[in-house]
Image 1: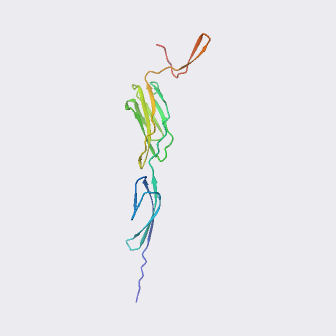
Image 2: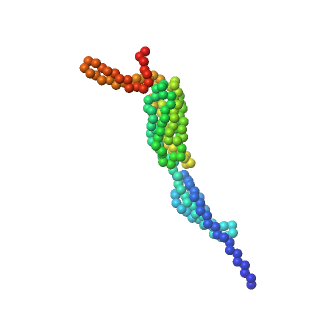
Image 3: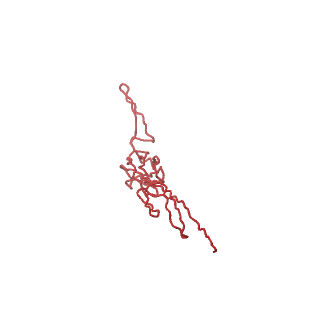
Length: 178
């Protein structure tokens, strides 16, 4: 009697995978929806056991960004303004929004954005931002209201001393009395 023994290989594989919060991942007979390390044993093409281990991560939508910070009052002497936020958890980029569109345009995909104001707009504009990642868009930040005026106003301080009043111009720029 002659015996030929053939040893077929067993396979072991490890996979790292990510899903978005609320999604599922299928591993053989298992439907997974939370982070962890999972193992499933399959039968390989050669009839041996094949073990697959999945390290599953669960990603979240970006957190709500902070209120944008920047100029609150715009005059016709200011053609553009810079606005910024703190980084929002889980965000990989950002979507900035300026309303109404007649106020100007906003550009930026990071934690800062530049608004180019249209010189013929006067009124109130709103600026909001939301985080973006592979799971989708987060919620918008609270709204920053910006007042745009084509008619700059002089700012001044005054002191009263006896019968006289002294006015001091604290504005930037030059203003003339017409």
